[in-house]
Length: 363
Image 1: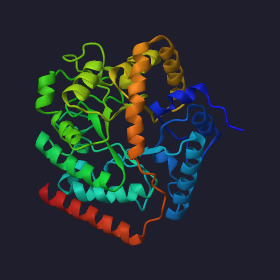
Image 2: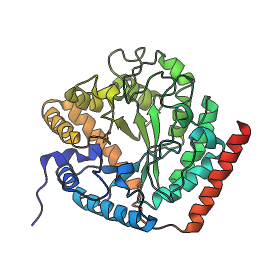
Image 3: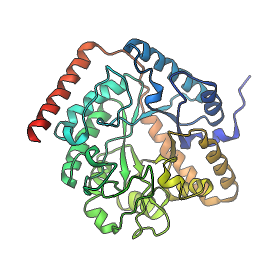
Image 4: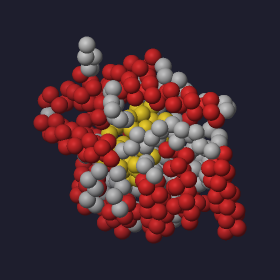
Protein backbone atom coordinates (compact mmCIF):
# COMPACT_ATOMS: atom_id res chain seq x y z
CA UNK A 1 0.00 0.00 0.00
CA UNK A 2 1.34 3.43 -0.91
CA UNK A 3 1.57 5.80 2.04
CA UNK A 4 -0.66 8.82 1.52
CA UNK A 5 1.09 12.18 1.63
CA UNK A 6 0.09 15.25 3.55
CA UNK A 7 -1.04 18.15 1.31
CA UNK A 8 1.70 20.15 2.99
CA UNK A 9 4.33 17.84 1.55
CA UNK A 10 3.78 19.63 -1.76
CA UNK A 11 5.65 22.55 -0.17
CA UNK A 12 8.36 20.57 1.61
CA UNK A 13 10.93 21.55 -1.02
CA UNK A 14 10.95 25.03 0.50
CA UNK A 15 11.93 24.14 4.07
CA UNK A 16 15.00 23.19 6.09
CA UNK A 17 14.12 22.47 9.71
CA UNK A 18 16.00 21.69 12.90
CA UNK A 19 15.78 18.32 14.63
CA UNK A 20 14.57 17.95 18.20
CA UNK A 21 17.57 16.43 19.98
CA UNK A 22 20.25 13.73 19.95
CA UNK A 23 17.80 10.94 19.12
CA UNK A 24 14.87 10.82 16.73
CA UNK A 25 11.69 11.76 18.59
CA UNK A 26 7.96 11.62 17.95
CA UNK A 27 8.14 15.39 17.43
CA UNK A 28 10.68 14.89 14.64
CA UNK A 29 8.64 12.08 13.13
CA UNK A 30 5.39 14.03 13.06
CA UNK A 31 6.98 17.14 11.52
CA UNK A 32 9.11 15.39 8.91
CA UNK A 33 6.37 12.99 7.85
CA UNK A 34 3.82 15.78 7.42
CA UNK A 35 6.08 18.33 5.74
CA UNK A 36 8.67 16.12 4.00
CA UNK A 37 11.18 18.99 4.08
CA UNK A 38 14.08 19.48 1.72
CA UNK A 39 16.53 19.07 4.55
CA UNK A 40 17.42 19.19 8.21
CA UNK A 41 19.62 21.52 10.22
CA UNK A 42 22.09 20.24 12.81
CA UNK A 43 22.77 22.29 15.93
CA UNK A 44 24.72 21.61 19.09
CA UNK A 45 21.66 19.96 20.65
CA UNK A 46 21.85 17.15 18.08
CA UNK A 47 25.21 15.85 19.29
CA UNK A 48 25.80 13.69 22.40
CA UNK A 49 28.30 16.05 23.96
CA UNK A 50 30.56 14.46 26.56
CA UNK A 51 30.16 11.01 25.05
CA UNK A 52 33.08 9.16 23.39
CA UNK A 53 33.54 9.92 19.70
CA UNK A 54 32.33 6.53 18.47
CA UNK A 55 29.23 6.75 20.66
CA UNK A 56 28.08 10.21 19.62
CA UNK A 57 28.89 9.43 15.98
CA UNK A 58 26.71 6.30 16.06
CA UNK A 59 23.87 8.30 17.60
CA UNK A 60 24.19 10.91 14.85
CA UNK A 61 24.20 8.21 12.15
CA UNK A 62 20.98 6.77 13.55
CA UNK A 63 19.37 10.22 13.87
CA UNK A 64 20.09 11.14 10.25
CA UNK A 65 19.00 7.75 8.89
CA UNK A 66 15.64 8.05 10.64
CA UNK A 67 15.25 11.68 9.58
CA UNK A 68 15.83 10.77 5.94
CA UNK A 69 13.36 7.89 6.14
CA UNK A 70 10.72 10.16 7.67
CA UNK A 71 11.25 12.78 4.96
CA UNK A 72 10.58 10.09 2.36
CA UNK A 73 13.17 11.54 -0.02
CA UNK A 74 15.87 9.82 -2.01
CA UNK A 75 18.28 12.55 -0.87
CA UNK A 76 18.03 15.25 1.78
CA UNK A 77 20.15 18.27 2.61
CA UNK A 78 21.97 18.04 5.93
CA UNK A 79 22.98 21.57 6.87
CA UNK A 80 25.08 23.16 9.60
CA UNK A 81 26.61 26.47 10.71
CA UNK A 82 30.29 25.80 11.34
CA UNK A 83 32.60 28.78 11.13
CA UNK A 84 35.03 28.48 14.02
CA UNK A 85 35.19 30.80 17.00
CA UNK A 86 31.85 30.86 18.80
CA UNK A 87 29.93 29.41 15.83
CA UNK A 88 30.82 25.81 16.56
CA UNK A 89 28.29 23.00 17.10
CA UNK A 90 30.18 19.72 17.20
CA UNK A 91 31.89 17.84 20.08
CA UNK A 92 35.51 16.72 20.25
CA UNK A 93 37.47 15.41 18.46
CA UNK A 94 36.11 17.68 15.68
CA UNK A 95 38.63 20.50 15.40
CA UNK A 96 37.72 23.80 17.00
CA UNK A 97 39.27 26.39 14.74
CA UNK A 98 39.51 30.03 15.83
CA UNK A 99 37.53 32.90 14.35
CA UNK A 100 37.69 33.52 10.60
CA UNK A 101 39.59 36.76 11.19
CA UNK A 102 42.46 34.65 12.56
CA UNK A 103 42.49 31.96 9.88
CA UNK A 104 41.80 34.15 6.83
CA UNK A 105 45.27 33.68 5.37
CA UNK A 106 44.87 29.90 5.84
CA UNK A 107 41.27 29.81 4.58
CA UNK A 108 41.86 27.16 1.91
CA UNK A 109 43.52 24.78 4.37
CA UNK A 110 40.83 25.41 6.99
CA UNK A 111 38.08 24.92 4.41
CA UNK A 112 39.59 21.58 3.41
CA UNK A 113 39.99 20.42 7.01
CA UNK A 114 36.48 21.45 7.99
CA UNK A 115 35.02 19.84 4.89
CA UNK A 116 36.75 16.53 5.62
CA UNK A 117 35.34 16.53 9.15
CA UNK A 118 31.84 17.77 8.25
CA UNK A 119 31.57 15.34 5.35
CA UNK A 120 32.25 12.50 7.79
CA UNK A 121 29.22 13.68 9.80
CA UNK A 122 26.87 13.28 6.83
CA UNK A 123 26.73 17.02 6.16
CA UNK A 124 26.37 18.21 2.58
CA UNK A 125 25.37 21.88 3.00
CA UNK A 126 27.48 24.39 4.92
CA UNK A 127 26.13 27.81 5.81
CA UNK A 128 29.36 29.57 4.90
CA UNK A 129 31.58 31.22 4.05
CA UNK A 130 30.74 34.46 5.82
CA UNK A 131 31.01 36.99 2.99
CA UNK A 132 30.35 39.96 5.25
CA UNK A 133 33.03 42.61 5.59
CA UNK A 134 33.97 43.81 9.07
CA UNK A 135 33.33 47.37 7.95
CA UNK A 136 31.72 48.69 11.14
CA UNK A 137 33.86 48.39 14.32
CA UNK A 138 30.69 48.73 16.42
CA UNK A 139 29.14 45.61 14.89
CA UNK A 140 28.06 43.29 17.75
CA UNK A 141 27.39 40.12 15.77
CA UNK A 142 29.90 39.83 12.88
CA UNK A 143 33.26 41.26 13.95
CA UNK A 144 35.85 38.48 14.01
CA UNK A 145 33.48 36.15 12.18
CA UNK A 146 34.37 38.11 9.02
CA UNK A 147 37.37 37.08 6.96
CA UNK A 148 38.61 40.65 6.77
CA UNK A 149 37.93 44.37 7.08
CA UNK A 150 38.14 45.11 3.35
CA UNK A 151 36.37 43.75 0.31
CA UNK A 152 39.64 42.49 -1.14
CA UNK A 153 40.57 40.56 2.01
CA UNK A 154 37.17 38.91 2.33
CA UNK A 155 36.94 38.10 -1.37
CA UNK A 156 40.32 36.39 -1.49
CA UNK A 157 39.77 34.32 1.63
CA UNK A 158 36.12 33.47 0.93
CA UNK A 159 36.89 32.24 -2.58
CA UNK A 160 39.71 30.01 -1.35
CA UNK A 161 37.52 28.63 1.43
CA UNK A 162 34.53 27.99 -0.83
CA UNK A 163 36.63 26.21 -3.45
CA UNK A 164 38.19 23.91 -0.85
CA UNK A 165 34.85 23.00 0.73
CA UNK A 166 32.92 22.42 -2.49
CA UNK A 167 35.76 20.32 -3.93
CA UNK A 168 35.12 17.80 -1.15
CA UNK A 169 31.43 17.29 -1.78
CA UNK A 170 29.78 19.93 0.39
CA UNK A 171 27.72 22.76 -1.08
CA UNK A 172 28.37 26.27 0.28
CA UNK A 173 25.92 29.03 1.16
CA UNK A 174 27.42 32.54 1.28
CA UNK A 175 25.99 34.74 4.01
CA UNK A 176 24.48 37.23 4.93
CA UNK A 177 23.30 39.00 1.76
CA UNK A 178 23.61 41.91 1.04
CA UNK A 179 26.04 42.23 3.94
CA UNK A 180 25.77 42.23 7.75
CA UNK A 181 29.17 43.76 8.43
CA UNK A 182 28.06 47.39 8.47
CA UNK A 183 25.34 47.04 11.10
CA UNK A 184 25.49 48.38 14.65
CA UNK A 185 22.83 45.98 16.01
CA UNK A 186 22.23 42.22 16.00
CA UNK A 187 19.42 40.86 13.79
CA UNK A 188 18.93 38.00 16.27
CA UNK A 189 17.49 40.65 18.63
CA UNK A 190 16.25 43.62 16.56
CA UNK A 191 15.89 44.67 12.92
CA UNK A 192 19.13 46.46 11.97
CA UNK A 193 19.14 49.37 9.54
CA UNK A 194 21.90 50.18 7.04
CA UNK A 195 21.49 53.52 5.30
CA UNK A 196 23.46 52.69 2.14
CA UNK A 197 22.47 53.03 -1.50
CA UNK A 198 22.61 50.21 -4.01
CA UNK A 199 25.66 51.76 -5.63
CA UNK A 200 27.44 52.02 -2.28
CA UNK A 201 26.75 48.34 -1.61
CA UNK A 202 27.99 47.40 -5.06
CA UNK A 203 31.24 49.26 -4.45
CA UNK A 204 32.06 47.41 -1.21
CA UNK A 205 29.69 45.04 0.65
CA UNK A 206 28.63 43.13 -2.45
CA UNK A 207 32.06 42.55 -3.95
CA UNK A 208 32.71 39.25 -2.07
CA UNK A 209 29.23 37.99 -2.94
CA UNK A 210 29.71 38.93 -6.57
CA UNK A 211 33.01 37.04 -6.72
CA UNK A 212 31.51 33.95 -5.09
CA UNK A 213 28.55 34.02 -7.47
CA UNK A 214 30.85 34.32 -10.47
CA UNK A 215 32.80 31.35 -9.06
CA UNK A 216 29.69 29.17 -8.94
CA UNK A 217 28.59 29.18 -5.31
CA UNK A 218 25.47 27.06 -4.86
CA UNK A 219 23.45 29.09 -2.35
CA UNK A 220 23.17 32.53 -0.80
CA UNK A 221 21.65 33.27 2.61
CA UNK A 222 19.64 36.43 3.21
CA UNK A 223 19.98 38.87 6.10
CA UNK A 224 17.16 40.31 8.19
CA UNK A 225 18.37 43.88 7.70
CA UNK A 226 16.60 46.99 6.48
CA UNK A 227 18.18 48.94 3.60
CA UNK A 228 15.71 51.85 3.34
CA UNK A 229 17.42 53.47 0.35
CA UNK A 230 16.69 50.33 -1.66
CA UNK A 231 13.43 49.15 -0.06
CA UNK A 232 11.65 51.53 2.32
CA UNK A 233 9.21 48.87 3.57
CA UNK A 234 10.86 45.47 3.77
CA UNK A 235 14.19 44.07 5.03
CA UNK A 236 16.39 42.07 2.69
CA UNK A 237 14.77 38.69 3.38
CA UNK A 238 11.38 40.05 2.26
CA UNK A 239 12.59 42.49 -0.37
CA UNK A 240 12.02 41.92 -4.08
CA UNK A 241 14.21 44.91 -5.05
CA UNK A 242 17.10 43.43 -3.06
CA UNK A 243 16.76 39.72 -3.83
CA UNK A 244 15.25 39.68 -7.31
CA UNK A 245 16.48 43.07 -8.49
CA UNK A 246 19.94 43.14 -6.97
CA UNK A 247 20.95 39.54 -6.24
CA UNK A 248 19.35 37.81 -9.19
CA UNK A 249 19.29 40.78 -11.58
CA UNK A 250 22.45 42.83 -11.19
CA UNK A 251 24.65 40.05 -9.77
CA UNK A 252 23.19 37.32 -11.96
CA UNK A 253 22.68 34.70 -9.21
CA UNK A 254 20.70 31.73 -10.49
CA UNK A 255 21.17 29.42 -7.52
CA UNK A 256 19.14 28.79 -4.37
CA UNK A 257 18.38 31.61 -1.93
CA UNK A 258 17.90 30.52 1.68
CA UNK A 259 16.62 32.72 4.50
CA UNK A 260 18.51 33.22 7.70
CA UNK A 261 16.61 31.70 10.61
CA UNK A 262 12.99 32.83 10.34
CA UNK A 263 12.72 32.84 14.14
CA UNK A 264 15.25 35.67 14.61
CA UNK A 265 13.59 38.60 16.34
CA UNK A 266 14.77 41.09 13.72
CA UNK A 267 12.18 39.49 11.44
CA UNK A 268 9.62 37.70 13.60
CA UNK A 269 8.94 40.70 15.88
CA UNK A 270 8.45 43.10 12.98
CA UNK A 271 6.15 41.16 10.64
CA UNK A 272 3.29 38.65 10.86
CA UNK A 273 3.75 35.02 9.87
CA UNK A 274 1.44 35.45 6.89
CA UNK A 275 3.30 38.50 5.64
CA UNK A 276 6.68 36.82 6.06
CA UNK A 277 5.59 33.63 4.28
CA UNK A 278 4.13 35.37 1.25
CA UNK A 279 6.66 38.20 0.96
CA UNK A 280 9.61 35.80 1.19
CA UNK A 281 8.38 33.90 -1.86
CA UNK A 282 7.52 37.06 -3.80
CA UNK A 283 10.97 38.46 -3.02
CA UNK A 284 12.67 35.53 -4.74
CA UNK A 285 13.64 33.25 -1.83
CA UNK A 286 13.60 29.50 -2.39
CA UNK A 287 14.01 27.94 1.07
CA UNK A 288 12.84 28.90 4.56
CA UNK A 289 15.20 28.01 7.42
CA UNK A 290 13.74 27.16 10.83
CA UNK A 291 16.53 26.28 13.25
CA UNK A 292 14.95 27.28 16.57
CA UNK A 293 11.21 26.60 16.32
CA UNK A 294 10.85 24.06 13.49
CA UNK A 295 7.19 23.39 14.26
CA UNK A 296 6.38 26.86 12.92
CA UNK A 297 7.25 25.58 9.46
CA UNK A 298 3.88 23.79 9.32
CA UNK A 299 2.01 27.08 9.68
CA UNK A 300 4.12 28.65 6.97
CA UNK A 301 3.47 25.72 4.63
CA UNK A 302 -0.27 26.10 5.23
CA UNK A 303 -0.02 29.79 4.40
CA UNK A 304 1.76 28.96 1.16
CA UNK A 305 -0.91 26.39 0.28
CA UNK A 306 -3.62 29.01 0.76
CA UNK A 307 -1.67 31.65 -1.17
CA UNK A 308 -1.08 29.37 -4.15
CA UNK A 309 -4.81 28.83 -4.45
CA UNK A 310 -5.47 32.55 -4.85
CA UNK A 311 -2.26 34.12 -6.18
CA UNK A 312 -0.89 33.24 -9.63
CA UNK A 313 2.28 35.24 -8.90
CA UNK A 314 3.11 33.13 -5.85
CA UNK A 315 2.27 29.95 -7.74
CA UNK A 316 4.62 30.97 -10.55
CA UNK A 317 7.36 32.00 -8.12
CA UNK A 318 7.23 28.63 -6.36
CA UNK A 319 7.31 26.80 -9.69
CA UNK A 320 10.54 28.59 -10.69
CA UNK A 321 11.90 28.03 -7.21
CA UNK A 322 11.39 24.27 -7.39
CA UNK A 323 13.45 24.14 -10.57
CA UNK A 324 16.36 25.86 -8.83
CA UNK A 325 16.02 23.57 -5.84
CA UNK A 326 15.94 20.48 -8.07
CA UNK A 327 19.23 21.54 -9.68
CA UNK A 328 20.79 21.96 -6.24
CA UNK A 329 19.60 18.57 -5.00
CA UNK A 330 20.90 16.90 -8.15
CA UNK A 331 24.35 18.40 -7.47
CA UNK A 332 24.46 17.41 -3.81
CA UNK A 333 26.25 14.29 -2.64
CA UNK A 334 24.90 12.04 0.08
CA UNK A 335 27.77 11.83 2.55
CA UNK A 336 27.81 8.75 4.82
CA UNK A 337 28.56 9.13 8.52
CA UNK A 338 31.99 7.59 9.02
CA UNK A 339 34.68 7.61 11.69
CA UNK A 340 37.90 9.49 10.97
CA UNK A 341 41.31 8.41 12.18
CA UNK A 342 43.25 9.96 15.04
CA UNK A 343 45.86 10.99 12.47
CA UNK A 344 43.35 13.13 10.58
CA UNK A 345 42.31 15.01 13.69
CA UNK A 346 45.94 15.39 14.80
CA UNK A 347 46.81 16.94 11.45
CA UNK A 348 43.92 19.38 11.67
CA UNK A 349 44.81 20.28 15.25
CA UNK A 350 48.35 20.99 14.07
CA UNK A 351 46.93 23.44 11.52
CA UNK A 352 44.82 25.03 14.24
CA UNK A 353 47.88 25.46 16.47
CA UNK A 354 49.83 27.01 13.60
CA UNK A 355 47.03 29.51 12.97
CA UNK A 356 46.86 30.51 16.62
CA UNK A 357 50.62 31.01 16.81
CA UNK A 358 50.57 33.13 13.67
CA UNK A 359 47.65 35.20 14.93
CA UNK A 360 49.41 35.72 18.27
CA UNK A 361 52.63 36.83 16.53
CA UNK A 362 50.75 39.26 14.26
CA UNK A 363 48.67 40.59 17.13
